[in-house]
Picture 1: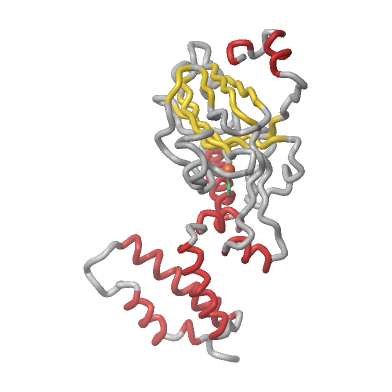
Picture 2: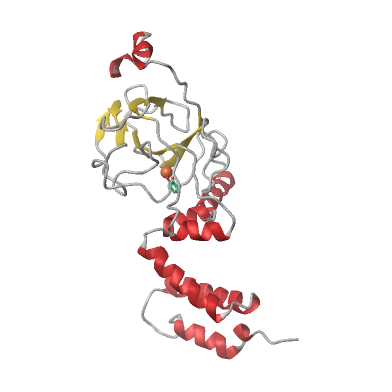
Length: 281
Ligand code: MBD
Ligand code: FE
């Protein structure tokens, strides 16, 4: 039987010391987390016989991942952000709560502070030759009653699958708005149909996905934060049913109840004439 070096008193003392367990300063929480992380890393290195080349490749990979601000993309792709949702779902179920629109991941591309509009908003700046999209909905509390004055914070990608702020070619807060619901809990927006997101093909996230034999595509989608005084916050999305990646999402965000179908019409003016979305015409 071979002795696990990572389990020896000498190594445990080394890691205890490295994680500040014998120091009376620092954060107890960080010490506990770091102790577990370092121990588990050592176990992985020993059990999977990680070579020195692999070790230093991993160090370099983390440097490149951070340098390109892609850590949020990687945790989504590894299913860890979806796992957080599954934990929250289970917590809610244990408390006898839940129901209503499911939660799903935020992703790494939210920007706070989008313009606030009452009841309705135009989200695009008219600079893109996109397909006009009308989006409307209604916010209800957990008791099933419509919620007036709720904030619907929306963000989505442009026709190229890029998000404003991260894509400096777009105007400030392009395709990002906060809409306050009207007396009946309703909100509506005029915007453009987004394209699906794809991880940068030469970035470190796609590099890892390639080594896993995977693509880095998300279906076209619209993100939502829903909030109202006295109510818990909901983070969710609508994923668009016409997209081939709908159920093949690299970030595992599509869920039952979060699929939206766009009703495509030839001519928005004709649709407006029928009185459906007339006020945006
Ligand atoms: C996105 O647009 C996104 O929503 C997620 C979760 C990950 C990467 C890009
Ligand atoms: Fe997104």
